[in-house]
Image (cartoon, rainbow, N blue to C red; front, side):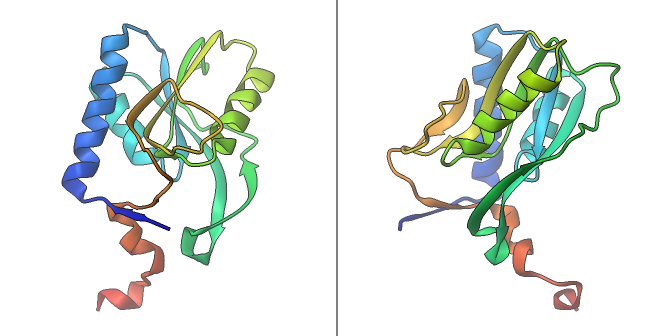
Length: 164
């Protein structure tokens, strides 16, 4: 398996590239829905730049092996938000689209559970070649399926005692 190592500078450049794509699309959205955990940093920046409220939905399938083994997808039954409603236009943000299962399931979940949503678009930093789901916005469409090492993942194996 190939590996892609990403620095903090590259990570932030990709977020800014994603913001430009969304801006240039002229699509207006009401709320940014960040998928925890990987999409939180990305959605926070998008929320700040576009001056839109941010909501959070926990969705996880990479819990085992310090986040390296994909298991059963779990989606939280509730969304954390401070605005009165989620819709009608929601930008769902995650860090990457690996197999596409998470974004596909989240979009279906939102459509089924939130009747006030009229339009959903998705945005990620990376889309892998073999992803079955194609996000509306992607900073990078990879020509392969590398394991992506993001800069914050150094904390996945760290304990408080490691800090001295």
